[in-house]
Image 1: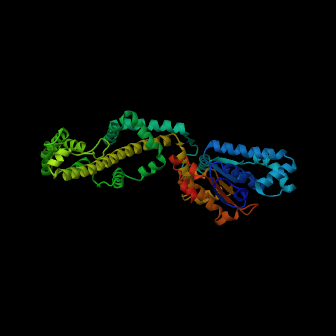
Image 2: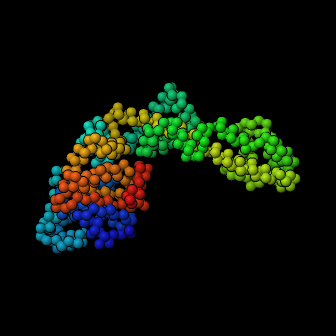
Image 3: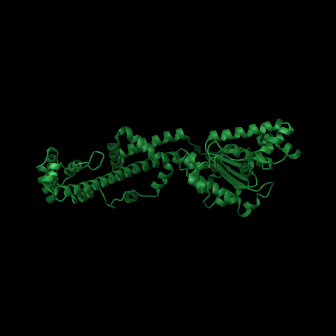
Length: 455
Protein backbone atom coordinates (compact mmCIF):
# COMPACT_ATOMS: atom_id res chain seq x y z
CA UNK A 1 0.00 0.00 0.00
CA UNK A 2 1.15 3.58 -0.60
CA UNK A 3 -0.25 5.11 2.57
CA UNK A 4 -2.32 4.06 5.55
CA UNK A 5 -5.81 5.56 5.61
CA UNK A 6 -7.62 6.20 8.90
CA UNK A 7 -9.38 2.84 8.97
CA UNK A 8 -6.20 0.92 8.19
CA UNK A 9 -4.25 2.91 10.79
CA UNK A 10 -6.81 2.25 13.52
CA UNK A 11 -6.73 -1.47 12.67
CA UNK A 12 -2.93 -1.61 12.59
CA UNK A 13 -2.56 0.10 15.96
CA UNK A 14 -5.37 -1.81 17.70
CA UNK A 15 -3.71 -3.04 20.93
CA UNK A 16 -5.86 -6.15 21.03
CA UNK A 17 -4.91 -7.51 17.60
CA UNK A 18 -1.71 -8.90 16.07
CA UNK A 19 -0.91 -7.22 12.75
CA UNK A 20 1.56 -7.24 9.86
CA UNK A 21 1.87 -3.96 7.98
CA UNK A 22 3.57 -3.85 4.56
CA UNK A 23 3.67 -0.33 3.19
CA UNK A 24 5.81 1.84 0.95
CA UNK A 25 8.37 4.44 1.97
CA UNK A 26 6.75 7.63 3.23
CA UNK A 27 3.46 5.95 4.08
CA UNK A 28 3.87 6.48 7.84
CA UNK A 29 5.07 3.07 9.03
CA UNK A 30 7.19 4.44 11.88
CA UNK A 31 4.39 6.81 12.84
CA UNK A 32 2.00 3.84 13.02
CA UNK A 33 4.49 1.90 15.14
CA UNK A 34 4.74 4.76 17.63
CA UNK A 35 0.93 4.97 17.68
CA UNK A 36 0.79 1.25 18.38
CA UNK A 37 3.10 1.59 21.39
CA UNK A 38 1.16 4.58 22.69
CA UNK A 39 -2.15 2.72 22.39
CA UNK A 40 -0.69 -0.33 24.15
CA UNK A 41 0.39 1.88 27.04
CA UNK A 42 -2.98 3.60 27.10
CA UNK A 43 -4.73 0.24 27.21
CA UNK A 44 -2.86 -0.65 30.40
CA UNK A 45 0.16 -2.56 29.15
CA UNK A 46 3.20 -2.12 31.39
CA UNK A 47 6.13 -0.40 29.60
CA UNK A 48 8.58 -3.15 30.60
CA UNK A 49 6.36 -5.83 29.03
CA UNK A 50 6.73 -4.41 25.53
CA UNK A 51 9.59 -5.62 23.35
CA UNK A 52 10.20 -3.40 20.33
CA UNK A 53 12.97 -4.61 18.02
CA UNK A 54 14.68 -2.42 15.42
CA UNK A 55 17.72 -3.03 13.25
CA UNK A 56 19.87 0.01 13.86
CA UNK A 57 20.67 2.03 16.97
CA UNK A 58 19.62 5.15 15.10
CA UNK A 59 16.16 3.70 14.44
CA UNK A 60 15.77 2.72 18.09
CA UNK A 61 16.80 6.21 19.21
CA UNK A 62 14.42 7.87 16.74
CA UNK A 63 11.51 5.74 17.86
CA UNK A 64 12.19 6.43 21.54
CA UNK A 65 12.45 10.15 20.83
CA UNK A 66 9.18 10.26 18.92
CA UNK A 67 7.34 8.30 21.59
CA UNK A 68 8.59 10.34 24.53
CA UNK A 69 7.91 13.58 22.66
CA UNK A 70 4.29 12.50 22.28
CA UNK A 71 3.93 11.30 25.87
CA UNK A 72 5.62 14.48 27.11
CA UNK A 73 3.16 16.68 25.22
CA UNK A 74 0.24 14.72 26.63
CA UNK A 75 1.22 15.63 30.19
CA UNK A 76 0.55 19.34 29.53
CA UNK A 77 -2.23 19.29 26.91
CA UNK A 78 -5.64 20.79 27.75
CA UNK A 79 -8.42 18.21 27.94
CA UNK A 80 -9.93 19.11 24.57
CA UNK A 81 -6.62 18.97 22.73
CA UNK A 82 -5.61 15.70 24.41
CA UNK A 83 -9.00 14.17 23.70
CA UNK A 84 -8.70 15.16 20.02
CA UNK A 85 -5.19 13.73 19.84
CA UNK A 86 -6.28 10.39 21.28
CA UNK A 87 -9.30 10.24 18.97
CA UNK A 88 -7.14 11.00 15.90
CA UNK A 89 -4.76 8.23 16.93
CA UNK A 90 -7.26 5.54 17.90
CA UNK A 91 -10.80 6.56 17.03
CA UNK A 92 -11.60 6.28 20.76
CA UNK A 93 -13.50 9.04 22.60
CA UNK A 94 -11.51 9.55 25.79
CA UNK A 95 -13.25 9.82 29.13
CA UNK A 96 -11.74 11.42 32.22
CA UNK A 97 -10.01 8.23 33.36
CA UNK A 98 -8.34 7.74 29.98
CA UNK A 99 -7.18 11.37 29.91
CA UNK A 100 -5.70 10.99 33.36
CA UNK A 101 -3.92 7.80 32.36
CA UNK A 102 -2.53 9.48 29.22
CA UNK A 103 -1.02 12.28 31.31
CA UNK A 104 0.76 9.77 33.54
CA UNK A 105 2.30 7.69 30.78
CA UNK A 106 5.43 9.82 30.42
CA UNK A 107 6.33 9.35 34.09
CA UNK A 108 5.23 5.71 34.05
CA UNK A 109 7.51 4.93 31.11
CA UNK A 110 10.45 6.70 32.73
CA UNK A 111 9.98 5.15 36.16
CA UNK A 112 9.17 1.61 35.08
CA UNK A 113 11.87 -0.74 36.53
CA UNK A 114 12.57 -2.41 33.20
CA UNK A 115 11.85 0.66 31.12
CA UNK A 116 10.62 0.71 27.57
CA UNK A 117 12.59 -1.90 25.66
CA UNK A 118 13.06 -0.23 22.29
CA UNK A 119 16.33 -1.76 21.14
CA UNK A 120 18.16 -3.44 18.32
CA UNK A 121 17.71 -7.18 18.02
CA UNK A 122 21.42 -7.54 18.72
CA UNK A 123 21.07 -5.63 22.00
CA UNK A 124 18.14 -7.88 22.96
CA UNK A 125 20.19 -10.99 22.19
CA UNK A 126 23.15 -9.68 24.17
CA UNK A 127 21.00 -9.12 27.26
CA UNK A 128 19.39 -12.53 26.88
CA UNK A 129 22.71 -14.38 26.53
CA UNK A 130 24.15 -12.60 29.55
CA UNK A 131 21.05 -13.56 31.51
CA UNK A 132 21.31 -17.23 30.50
CA UNK A 133 25.02 -17.82 29.76
CA UNK A 134 25.10 -21.43 30.95
CA UNK A 135 22.07 -22.43 28.91
CA UNK A 136 23.53 -20.64 25.86
CA UNK A 137 27.04 -22.08 26.40
CA UNK A 138 28.73 -18.68 26.32
CA UNK A 139 31.22 -17.00 28.63
CA UNK A 140 29.13 -15.05 31.19
CA UNK A 141 31.08 -11.80 30.90
CA UNK A 142 31.66 -11.79 27.16
CA UNK A 143 32.26 -8.54 25.32
CA UNK A 144 30.66 -7.62 22.00
CA UNK A 145 32.65 -6.66 18.92
CA UNK A 146 31.34 -3.68 17.00
CA UNK A 147 31.76 -3.50 13.23
CA UNK A 148 35.14 -1.76 13.43
CA UNK A 149 36.54 -4.21 15.99
CA UNK A 150 35.21 -7.13 13.96
CA UNK A 151 37.06 -5.87 10.89
CA UNK A 152 40.28 -5.46 12.85
CA UNK A 153 40.04 -8.97 14.30
CA UNK A 154 39.32 -10.47 10.88
CA UNK A 155 42.41 -8.71 9.51
CA UNK A 156 44.47 -10.15 12.36
CA UNK A 157 43.08 -13.62 11.61
CA UNK A 158 43.91 -13.25 7.90
CA UNK A 159 47.52 -12.31 8.71
CA UNK A 160 47.83 -15.35 10.99
CA UNK A 161 46.50 -17.61 8.23
CA UNK A 162 48.94 -16.24 5.64
CA UNK A 163 51.84 -16.78 8.02
CA UNK A 164 50.69 -20.29 8.94
CA UNK A 165 50.16 -21.30 5.30
CA UNK A 166 53.65 -20.20 4.29
CA UNK A 167 55.24 -22.29 7.05
CA UNK A 168 52.99 -25.27 7.73
CA UNK A 169 50.17 -25.76 5.17
CA UNK A 170 51.27 -26.38 1.53
CA UNK A 171 47.70 -26.93 0.27
CA UNK A 172 46.55 -23.61 1.71
CA UNK A 173 49.70 -21.93 0.40
CA UNK A 174 48.92 -23.24 -3.08
CA UNK A 175 45.37 -21.86 -2.85
CA UNK A 176 46.71 -18.46 -1.79
CA UNK A 177 49.30 -18.49 -4.59
CA UNK A 178 46.74 -19.40 -7.24
CA UNK A 179 44.27 -16.76 -6.10
CA UNK A 180 47.02 -14.12 -5.90
CA UNK A 181 48.19 -14.92 -9.44
CA UNK A 182 44.63 -14.47 -10.66
CA UNK A 183 43.71 -11.33 -8.75
CA UNK A 184 47.03 -9.64 -8.03
CA UNK A 185 48.14 -8.75 -4.53
CA UNK A 186 46.04 -5.59 -4.41
CA UNK A 187 42.76 -7.36 -5.18
CA UNK A 188 43.56 -10.48 -3.15
CA UNK A 189 42.65 -8.70 0.08
CA UNK A 190 39.44 -7.38 -1.50
CA UNK A 191 38.37 -10.89 -2.55
CA UNK A 192 39.09 -12.43 0.84
CA UNK A 193 37.38 -9.53 2.64
CA UNK A 194 34.31 -9.87 0.40
CA UNK A 195 34.11 -13.59 1.19
CA UNK A 196 34.46 -13.30 4.95
CA UNK A 197 32.02 -10.39 5.04
CA UNK A 198 29.40 -12.96 3.98
CA UNK A 199 30.30 -15.12 6.97
CA UNK A 200 26.67 -15.37 8.10
CA UNK A 201 26.16 -18.12 5.48
CA UNK A 202 29.68 -18.95 4.25
CA UNK A 203 30.79 -19.92 7.75
CA UNK A 204 28.05 -22.51 8.26
CA UNK A 205 28.55 -23.82 4.72
CA UNK A 206 32.30 -24.29 5.18
CA UNK A 207 31.91 -25.84 8.64
CA UNK A 208 29.48 -28.45 7.38
CA UNK A 209 31.29 -29.27 4.13
CA UNK A 210 34.72 -30.78 3.52
CA UNK A 211 37.02 -29.31 0.88
CA UNK A 212 36.33 -32.27 -1.39
CA UNK A 213 32.57 -31.85 -0.98
CA UNK A 214 32.85 -28.12 -1.63
CA UNK A 215 34.56 -28.81 -4.94
CA UNK A 216 32.02 -31.52 -5.80
CA UNK A 217 29.13 -29.12 -5.18
CA UNK A 218 30.82 -26.36 -7.16
CA UNK A 219 31.54 -28.70 -10.06
CA UNK A 220 27.92 -29.86 -10.06
CA UNK A 221 26.68 -26.26 -10.00
CA UNK A 222 28.96 -25.40 -12.93
CA UNK A 223 27.94 -28.57 -14.82
CA UNK A 224 31.45 -29.96 -14.84
CA UNK A 225 32.41 -33.60 -14.74
CA UNK A 226 33.03 -34.67 -11.11
CA UNK A 227 36.79 -35.23 -11.61
CA UNK A 228 37.33 -32.40 -14.09
CA UNK A 229 40.71 -30.68 -13.92
CA UNK A 230 43.17 -29.05 -16.30
CA UNK A 231 44.41 -32.42 -17.61
CA UNK A 232 40.97 -33.93 -18.22
CA UNK A 233 39.76 -30.67 -19.76
CA UNK A 234 42.69 -30.69 -22.20
CA UNK A 235 42.13 -34.34 -23.08
CA UNK A 236 38.42 -33.73 -23.74
CA UNK A 237 39.17 -30.61 -25.80
CA UNK A 238 41.67 -32.38 -28.02
CA UNK A 239 39.10 -34.99 -29.02
CA UNK A 240 37.17 -32.21 -30.77
CA UNK A 241 40.15 -31.50 -33.03
CA UNK A 242 40.95 -34.66 -34.97
CA UNK A 243 44.55 -34.49 -36.34
CA UNK A 244 43.71 -35.69 -39.88
CA UNK A 245 40.91 -33.13 -40.19
CA UNK A 246 43.16 -30.42 -38.72
CA UNK A 247 45.80 -31.16 -41.37
CA UNK A 248 43.25 -31.17 -44.19
CA UNK A 249 41.82 -27.82 -43.02
CA UNK A 250 45.36 -26.45 -42.58
CA UNK A 251 46.20 -27.31 -46.20
CA UNK A 252 43.07 -25.57 -47.43
CA UNK A 253 43.76 -22.48 -45.32
CA UNK A 254 47.37 -22.33 -46.53
CA UNK A 255 46.07 -21.48 -50.01
CA UNK A 256 44.18 -18.43 -48.76
CA UNK A 257 45.02 -14.92 -47.56
CA UNK A 258 47.49 -13.90 -44.84
CA UNK A 259 44.98 -14.47 -42.00
CA UNK A 260 44.16 -17.90 -43.40
CA UNK A 261 47.85 -18.82 -43.51
CA UNK A 262 48.25 -17.83 -39.82
CA UNK A 263 45.32 -20.06 -38.88
CA UNK A 264 46.77 -22.83 -41.00
CA UNK A 265 50.02 -22.80 -39.01
CA UNK A 266 48.12 -22.97 -35.71
CA UNK A 267 45.99 -25.88 -36.92
CA UNK A 268 49.04 -27.75 -38.21
CA UNK A 269 50.84 -27.27 -34.90
CA UNK A 270 47.89 -28.64 -32.87
CA UNK A 271 47.72 -31.68 -35.16
CA UNK A 272 51.37 -32.42 -34.36
CA UNK A 273 51.87 -31.32 -30.74
CA UNK A 274 48.55 -31.92 -28.92
CA UNK A 275 49.55 -29.54 -26.11
CA UNK A 276 47.69 -26.88 -24.14
CA UNK A 277 49.75 -24.11 -25.75
CA UNK A 278 48.91 -25.38 -29.25
CA UNK A 279 45.22 -25.64 -28.32
CA UNK A 280 45.16 -22.06 -27.03
CA UNK A 281 46.57 -20.83 -30.35
CA UNK A 282 43.76 -22.53 -32.25
CA UNK A 283 41.13 -21.17 -29.85
CA UNK A 284 42.56 -17.67 -30.34
CA UNK A 285 42.26 -18.19 -34.10
CA UNK A 286 38.58 -19.00 -33.77
CA UNK A 287 37.42 -16.80 -30.87
CA UNK A 288 37.69 -13.13 -29.94
CA UNK A 289 39.34 -12.01 -26.71
CA UNK A 290 35.81 -11.79 -25.26
CA UNK A 291 35.30 -15.49 -26.00
CA UNK A 292 32.87 -14.98 -28.88
CA UNK A 293 33.09 -16.68 -32.26
CA UNK A 294 34.92 -14.55 -34.82
CA UNK A 295 32.72 -13.08 -37.54
CA UNK A 296 34.76 -14.76 -40.31
CA UNK A 297 36.69 -17.97 -39.71
CA UNK A 298 38.20 -17.97 -43.20
CA UNK A 299 38.37 -15.57 -46.14
CA UNK A 300 35.97 -15.91 -49.05
CA UNK A 301 38.81 -16.93 -51.32
CA UNK A 302 39.76 -19.90 -49.14
CA UNK A 303 36.12 -20.93 -48.73
CA UNK A 304 35.49 -20.77 -52.48
CA UNK A 305 38.59 -22.83 -53.20
CA UNK A 306 37.51 -25.74 -50.93
CA UNK A 307 33.81 -26.50 -50.43
CA UNK A 308 34.51 -28.62 -47.33
CA UNK A 309 36.37 -25.84 -45.51
CA UNK A 310 33.27 -23.90 -44.43
CA UNK A 311 31.53 -26.79 -42.62
CA UNK A 312 34.80 -27.86 -40.97
CA UNK A 313 35.52 -24.34 -39.70
CA UNK A 314 31.97 -24.02 -38.37
CA UNK A 315 32.40 -27.36 -36.59
CA UNK A 316 35.72 -26.23 -35.06
CA UNK A 317 34.14 -22.90 -34.11
CA UNK A 318 31.33 -24.60 -32.18
CA UNK A 319 33.87 -26.85 -30.48
CA UNK A 320 35.96 -23.82 -29.53
CA UNK A 321 32.97 -22.11 -27.92
CA UNK A 322 32.16 -25.23 -25.92
CA UNK A 323 35.78 -25.66 -24.83
CA UNK A 324 36.10 -22.03 -23.78
CA UNK A 325 32.87 -22.26 -21.78
CA UNK A 326 34.13 -25.34 -19.95
CA UNK A 327 37.54 -23.73 -19.40
CA UNK A 328 35.87 -20.71 -17.87
CA UNK A 329 33.65 -22.89 -15.68
CA UNK A 330 36.65 -24.90 -14.49
CA UNK A 331 38.60 -21.73 -13.75
CA UNK A 332 35.68 -20.24 -11.80
CA UNK A 333 35.29 -23.47 -9.86
CA UNK A 334 38.98 -23.68 -9.01
CA UNK A 335 39.24 -20.03 -7.96
CA UNK A 336 36.03 -20.23 -5.92
CA UNK A 337 37.26 -23.39 -4.19
CA UNK A 338 40.55 -21.63 -3.41
CA UNK A 339 38.72 -18.60 -2.07
CA UNK A 340 36.46 -20.70 0.13
CA UNK A 341 39.46 -22.66 1.41
CA UNK A 342 41.19 -19.42 2.38
CA UNK A 343 38.01 -17.87 3.80
CA UNK A 344 37.38 -21.00 5.86
CA UNK A 345 40.89 -20.84 7.33
CA UNK A 346 40.51 -17.13 8.13
CA UNK A 347 37.13 -17.67 9.80
CA UNK A 348 38.50 -20.58 11.82
CA UNK A 349 41.35 -18.37 13.07
CA UNK A 350 38.88 -15.55 13.70
CA UNK A 351 36.64 -17.76 15.86
CA UNK A 352 39.68 -18.99 17.81
CA UNK A 353 40.73 -15.40 18.54
CA UNK A 354 37.20 -14.58 19.74
CA UNK A 355 37.12 -17.59 22.05
CA UNK A 356 40.48 -16.77 23.61
CA UNK A 357 39.38 -13.19 24.23
CA UNK A 358 35.80 -13.97 25.32
CA UNK A 359 34.28 -11.96 22.46
CA UNK A 360 31.14 -12.33 20.36
CA UNK A 361 30.30 -10.47 17.17
CA UNK A 362 26.84 -9.47 15.99
CA UNK A 363 26.36 -12.70 14.05
CA UNK A 364 27.30 -14.70 17.16
CA UNK A 365 24.63 -12.91 19.18
CA UNK A 366 21.95 -13.96 16.69
CA UNK A 367 23.26 -17.49 16.18
CA UNK A 368 23.75 -18.25 19.88
CA UNK A 369 20.27 -16.94 20.70
CA UNK A 370 18.64 -18.94 17.90
CA UNK A 371 20.54 -22.04 19.06
CA UNK A 372 19.55 -21.37 22.66
CA UNK A 373 15.89 -21.58 21.68
CA UNK A 374 16.56 -25.03 20.17
CA UNK A 375 18.63 -26.33 23.09
CA UNK A 376 17.47 -28.69 25.89
CA UNK A 377 17.13 -25.64 28.16
CA UNK A 378 14.95 -23.74 25.72
CA UNK A 379 11.69 -24.44 27.56
CA UNK A 380 13.05 -22.95 30.79
CA UNK A 381 14.50 -19.90 29.05
CA UNK A 382 11.31 -19.24 27.09
CA UNK A 383 9.23 -19.67 30.24
CA UNK A 384 11.32 -17.09 32.12
CA UNK A 385 11.42 -14.75 29.16
CA UNK A 386 7.74 -15.22 28.44
CA UNK A 387 6.88 -13.97 31.90
CA UNK A 388 8.24 -10.54 31.07
CA UNK A 389 6.85 -9.88 27.57
CA UNK A 390 3.28 -9.31 26.47
CA UNK A 391 3.82 -7.66 23.08
CA UNK A 392 6.48 -7.96 20.37
CA UNK A 393 6.84 -5.12 17.88
CA UNK A 394 9.24 -5.34 14.93
CA UNK A 395 10.36 -2.32 12.93
CA UNK A 396 11.77 -2.58 9.38
CA UNK A 397 10.82 -6.25 9.35
CA UNK A 398 12.00 -6.65 5.74
CA UNK A 399 15.57 -6.60 7.09
CA UNK A 400 15.01 -9.60 9.33
CA UNK A 401 17.24 -12.59 8.52
CA UNK A 402 16.02 -16.17 8.69
CA UNK A 403 17.90 -16.72 11.96
CA UNK A 404 16.36 -13.56 13.44
CA UNK A 405 12.90 -14.74 12.42
CA UNK A 406 13.64 -17.98 14.28
CA UNK A 407 14.17 -15.95 17.46
CA UNK A 408 10.98 -13.92 17.02
CA UNK A 409 9.02 -17.05 16.14
CA UNK A 410 10.26 -18.91 19.24
CA UNK A 411 9.16 -16.09 21.54
CA UNK A 412 5.85 -15.59 19.76
CA UNK A 413 4.98 -19.28 19.81
CA UNK A 414 5.39 -19.28 23.59
CA UNK A 415 2.80 -16.46 23.69
CA UNK A 416 0.05 -18.58 22.28
CA UNK A 417 0.71 -22.07 23.61
CA UNK A 418 0.53 -23.84 26.97
CA UNK A 419 0.98 -21.74 30.09
CA UNK A 420 2.11 -18.79 27.98
CA UNK A 421 -1.34 -18.46 26.46
CA UNK A 422 -2.83 -17.87 29.92
CA UNK A 423 -0.42 -15.08 30.78
CA UNK A 424 -1.93 -12.64 28.32
CA UNK A 425 -5.38 -12.41 29.87
CA UNK A 426 -4.81 -8.99 31.44
CA UNK A 427 -6.01 -5.62 30.10
CA UNK A 428 -5.17 -6.66 26.51
CA UNK A 429 -4.40 -9.88 24.68
CA UNK A 430 -0.81 -10.74 23.81
CA UNK A 431 0.14 -9.58 20.32
CA UNK A 432 2.82 -9.57 17.65
CA UNK A 433 3.17 -6.56 15.35
CA UNK A 434 5.55 -6.11 12.40
CA UNK A 435 5.95 -3.29 9.92
CA UNK A 436 8.16 -3.16 6.85
CA UNK A 437 8.63 -2.59 3.14
CA UNK A 438 10.36 -5.29 1.07
CA UNK A 439 11.51 -2.68 -1.47
CA UNK A 440 13.55 -0.95 1.24
CA UNK A 441 15.56 -3.98 2.32
CA UNK A 442 19.21 -2.98 2.89
CA UNK A 443 20.48 -5.87 5.02
CA UNK A 444 20.77 -8.68 2.47
CA UNK A 445 24.51 -8.71 3.10
CA UNK A 446 23.70 -9.74 6.68
CA UNK A 447 21.35 -12.49 5.60
CA UNK A 448 18.09 -10.54 5.53
CA UNK A 449 15.30 -12.29 3.62
CA UNK A 450 12.49 -9.84 2.71
CA UNK A 451 10.37 -12.73 1.38
CA UNK A 452 10.12 -14.06 4.93
CA UNK A 453 8.28 -10.90 5.95
CA UNK A 454 5.85 -11.23 3.05
CA UNK A 455 5.08 -14.82 3.95
